[in-house]
Length: 163
Length: 319
Image (cartoon, rainbow over all chains, first blue to last red; front, top):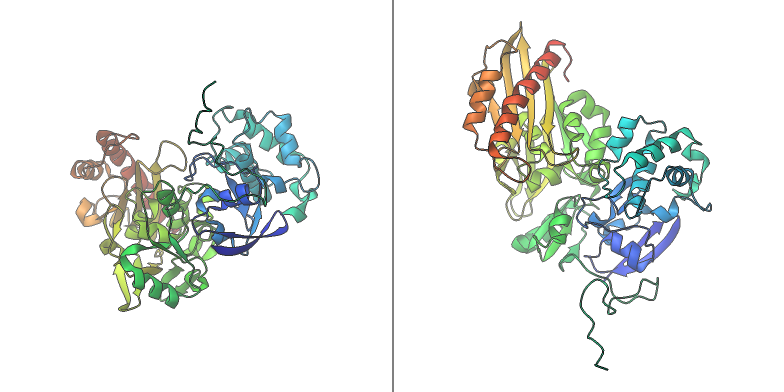
């Protein structure tokens, strides 16, 4: 077992894991942060995307031990002390999900996009979200939700600290 | 009343730990067991890798190796993680070449002004690799050492004439030309105790133009066929050119203007050369594309990419 220390959603967390435990499993099973979903578990579906030091990464393709000293943001960390962030509200208002399984990955990836490019075009949104699979909605409503968020209050106004 | 049925193994078996933080005993494990080693220096990494040679795999960004572990297609006894070795990351210039540490992420390459200026082909090719969440972790050295026959970066390394620096504890440093590096599917010239540490890519010279394009089923998928080209044009004639293809053989393939029969040809008549090349290749067939379809893509993409490279050369830009 290897001791690890990392920051998750602004909180310092510690644990002790076997080398082969993925970051996704550590978050879900050790820390109880089950908002991060596991679909394919080999890097194809994007459901498990989290922010690792601010950049989107597949948490199923990162070992928990590799997150040592890093900052992880999961979907639970997007809204800070609010019930929902502006991005989440915009996606809810646009019905950007049906079953909701893929939604955490989309939220994180869309969040990363809007941080870098607060006013993306539809094409840029589609490009950025191309690595996330949804089997229900046909993507239209997801893209609409992200575009709606981009025209509302900028992300900076909400819980910058939680990143 | 019969006995209670025995718990069936499976995802919802009551034997699995409950998802209550702090109270849980075991983790569901997907990857096979290995000894995780996280050396802090290259020297230490070379030593650990040499100690376990055949039983050890080097972990770079993990975007190919971790899926292989998850699918249990790889079962190394030791995993030597290079991610804590700062000296393996970075982009610098030396003697007309850009020197890239093997652990430099694809994202860092995409954002580098030096790369954009000196190696404009590279960011063009990077945009086709996976997705942002893959490129933030994936590394140049990892992709090259993995040697996937459908990957973009081996073709870029070939067409730009990259030099790959391999190091081992017992035999020191050696430099391998990209064209001697890729030996077959997932097979490279790296020896069991060697680690790829640096990639040196000569600047794209002023007066040359380059282009990368590929066709895949979906954005971010591996290419069915990808083509990289660099061309130098003088007075409308091809002075020299290089074309590298991915997805068409057991490794990335390089052809020069001589081999393509393009030396001294006018910049714009590439169809015949592309047809000859397509016939000469024996591309694989899989779920994504048949061999004849891949040949068709070679015939279509090679002229298109060469034309754009020549246009860029003629425009005086180096992109």
